[in-house]
Amino acid sequence: MRLWIGLYLPQLPLEVFSPNWSTDRGVVVLEGERVLAASPLAHAAGVQIGMRRGGVLMLMPEARIVERSPEREAEALHAVAMALLQYTPQVAQAEESTLLIDIGASLRLFGGIRALCARVRASLRALGFSGCLSCAPTARGTWMLARRRAGRVLTVASLTRRLDRLPSTLPPPARPFAAWFEGIGCFDIGAMRRLPRPGLQRRCGRALLDMLDAAYGMAPELFEWIEAPTVFHARIELFDRIENAEQCLQGAQRLVQQLTGWLCAHQLATLRITLLLEHERGKVARPPTAVEIALGEPTWRDEHLVRLLKERLAQVVLEAPVIGLALDAPQLQPMAPLTESLFPEPGGSEEDRVRMLELLIARLGPDNVLQALPQADYRPEVANAWVPLHQKVRESVRSSQMPSDVQSLPRPTWILAKPIALLMRNHRPFYGSPLKMASTPERIEAGWWNEPQTRDYFIAEGQDHTLYWVYRERIVGASEDAHPRWFLHGLFG
Image (cartoon, rainbow, N blue to C red; front, side, top):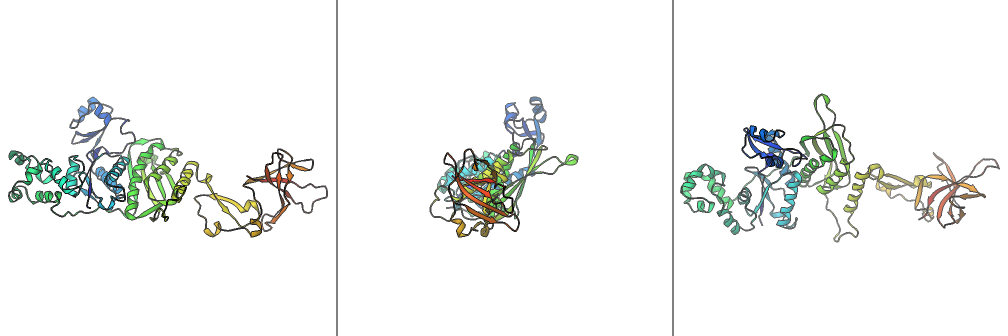
């Protein structure tokens, strides 16, 4: 089934990004010295559309006045289009700040038209925009419904009834002839279609008939699809200076939405992203502050990336105000399916586990989340090595095993990072209470090439029946009155 979503952005001039757009101060956008758009705070102060600059300053002297920038509007519309590529590769730009999305092949993937429209609205809110969304079986019909906020229809019959009630001046080719249509009593598109086609073509041109035929599904539609660039780099300029890194999250979320669309368009996943916090330029210029996120598994989902950025930004202390944000994805790989299993994994999937670990790394730091790196060595300190989780470990090293004679020996659950020297009382090692040896000795004599160790290990039991792993140093070449030293090296669970 061919189905389109139309997205009209009527407040595009307002979307000069600011983290405090609604609460900070009144912002007014001018075009030709007249108000084109205003923030909610400016509206509350009495600023109206069409008001002159002097009237704005009289009502709100502290208002921030900016001129409309078609270049920035085009960049904003392109950013929305990039984000929508995560739902379908067929996104086209139409007239008057409108995007057309062919979502017929994506309905089942996203759970139907209602769920898909909800996701599109959520992406739009994450980008900081507000728009009018419509749905129809034809692209031109969708465009007309979006421009008039006329809702959604799913069949051609319903679309025909809905379009017939729209005003006759809605199609752009008909607007130059608005007075003529009003003079003959043609106020809606239904009445326009009942006019003789040859006379309507002579009066208004062929473009009007072509648009009507395409809207009603009687003519084919051709579009030039928006293509994602080969390399991703997104940047936004902030409306105000930001002195708290956590306030950059809203702008970072906007960039992540574009990254998600770009990754889906190219069928790629990212292993690392870099968010650059740009500072002042000129004489007091300083290099951007880089916030890097390293992922344990490749991803193309925006929710997880935003969550990790939130944790990292909460730990960043800015040395200077931020005036711009940029996002790069330097490490990419082809997108892989989420799971190869037919049934859900018990206790969560591997992807869920990796996301939890990545969140811990973002919150605690990469040096505080470690993974085991066992080594084939008799010495416990070397055999039980730990490295940061983001460090890649060769599978051959990870799967290295101790000899079979060592694997059968008991080992404690917790090996201390540094052995603790034990006191001696009545010729017995003491740790909270006298320790009684509960096993025969295990002799470890290794490391002659760099750090030689000669030890006798025992399982010792305290008076509370706690089991410890202790060792006694063998003294080679010492005098007869020298006493061996005892150390605590591990605890059993």
